[in-house]
Length: 451
Image (cartoon, rainbow, N blue to C red; front, side, top):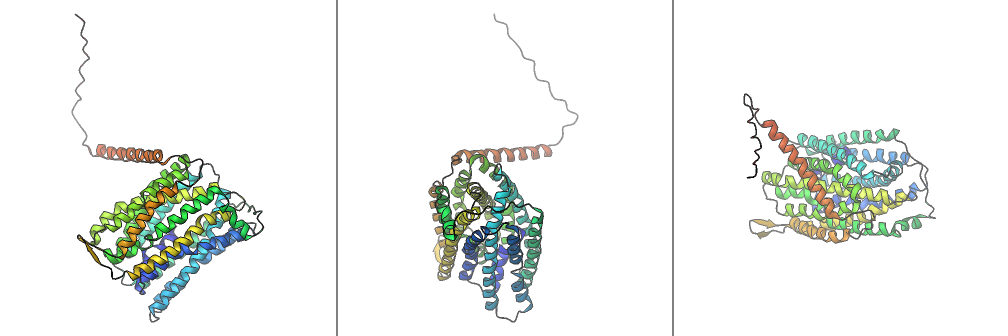
């Protein structure tokens, strides 16, 4: 998680901007993490032809962890080279890095699907995601402090961040050396095409793939441009954007375990419905964000925490659905289909949105005390599309799922009781102790005889 956060944070956006990146380049950067998801199909095909996944997974991960070092160090040591050369080289390396990342993801997921017991699986994901979020918050806090005094030496700073990310990323992979791996259960399908069609022929998976494809379109219209919007339009400093994401990850960590337990008790679909229902809030709040860095920081802080919690719920529910509903045979292909098809469509959407943002670069329409720009158009469109995802998530077929409102009610009650007890405890601890004063005894109960 440390490597992922440090290589996908606002630091990357700011580094690209220092090389002359426009909205189109940022759109491409935002599209690559999902656009390269087709590599998961390649991994699924290869996984059916090996006995163990770990050696292949580890090799891909080690190569991925060092991808950015040549660009980060090269742009620092050779400043005379044209920034556009480094920019396009950075985009090309990102293609390779994301390809390796998505090649390794279904290998690891199918490994964990065979290794972990399905009973209580969502609670495990909730606990794991909680510590992942805390790790992400710690990394973002470190980056915030590192860039506290500004980003004038962006190339040097980016080289340091990528070097630390590579070290932490390699250490992460080495921790799995002692984790057992069950052998792969090979698919009975004859070839790649038959293996690819198997998830589409499963009604439950087909409904899930349809929803995820639409959801990626709705999200990728606006999500890739949030950090750029805060840096360019709102006028925040890099450390302020990083601080926002730091607090956001803490919000996700606080609720991850609760969301995992809810997914285990009520079903993945129920948690997905609640999270998708509330996801348009972040686009709405970004549209209303004031063009004042300090004021926007404090007003957006609660929204970022809520949005991180919703993202955690979506991720936990997705992982739980994929692992619980995919068969042991051909599991890797089922996992790849559940994410790659939607991701490819989302990647294309991000590129188109980035191009549209570039074309709307001069857009400035006065509206009350604010101004409508290309960012606001994309965020408004994304918000409307996210509302459209609410009826689509209901079509997912999951027999063990419960209606969403009882889940929502339980979450509200649990969180309310938790914070009430915390506040009550703080009040009691601050209340001065009463000394030298005896409590007045209660009056004795008087009984009246009937006359």
